[in-house]
Length: 436
Ligand SMILES: C[S@@+](CC[C@H](N)C(=O)[O-])C[C@H]1O[C@@H](n2cnc3c(N)ncnc32)[C@H](O)[C@@H]1O
Image (cartoon, rainbow, N blue to C red; front, side, top):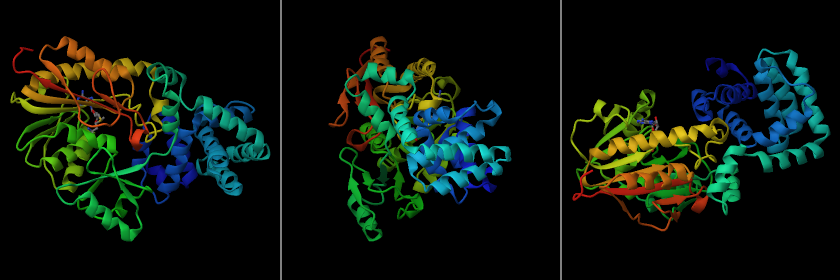
């Protein structure tokens, strides 16, 4: 990644797109690793290409006279970026063509300068035809077929709206730290900077800003007055609503968005923030430090409590399970290309194993909140229905609120509904009268 710092933005963007498409890397992780000054442009270009890849690939394949070699994926990505600037972004043609072609030199492939220049000029000359092809292909290929099939089966009435929501730009939600301020007071601090904020309808600490902002422009961000978090994700802490001094397990906690909110609601709770990814634990620590909160943070596999549990039951468990993330495609447009159909079975097996393993850790009368940012029934209400069937002392508790839609078990928000991300929640309590 250090090579990226010295490259011009279009060359940097091409390498990032190539890392996602060629090596299955996450777009956000690649962008986080790149802290250069041109980050806004690089982000716009790479997010745009991921969002419109279906349309762009179709135009590129129509324009390329012969396919590029696999080792020239960076040049293919550069061409996609050039086409995105012409058809998706409407950058002036001289910049879209000239600077994109020059980026091939930056990538150490001088031979490709002419190819990029010529292909983009052809696209420009046939603009009307290629723009039409881009739009048609984008309409029919903005998601892989397996995902469209799953969405159509799960949501026959709504799948087109889901796809449109996934292709749109996400809103910018923040969470005020209720220990330090209120929504009203914080919204007033935004007014002098002409930042318009609206209160979230369902999440009591949520404000939606009319325009996205760099976090360092949010008053008090570094002092922990506010965090960036979608309103749907903010429902978790208020649904679990821990009481004073309770013992809470946040089982899949990194990077700690919900951990921070739980502790803002209940700072004297004894919270164990667990995650299996050692390299993500540092993000929990950073988030809590910024918010002035503390938790026990440790690495561990939630499906193997024998490795980390001290045998003291928990009053409540938040299981924000690893999932397909199909509810947050608008925030992470690369997800649709990185996920594969066969991943869904593997994910549902992991979720079931974690649920089963954590249930004995809950005290009788305690509550487990199951959450995913998925909109696939297999990971959500079907998963929970199966668990309730096989677990004698698990009882579903109704979830308060009018958000999303009631499912046979739990509630589901589809992406874009009330401006929120796609999320699923179900709350279970452990009866104290039946054995497990
Ligand atoms: C949806 S993310 C959690 C987001 C987090 N709760 C938040 O609000 O910021 C799921 C997390 O589960 C973790 N994970 C995956 N498998 C796990 C396992 N078997 N045990 C514990 N954590 C796991 C991943 O590393 C990832 O950080």
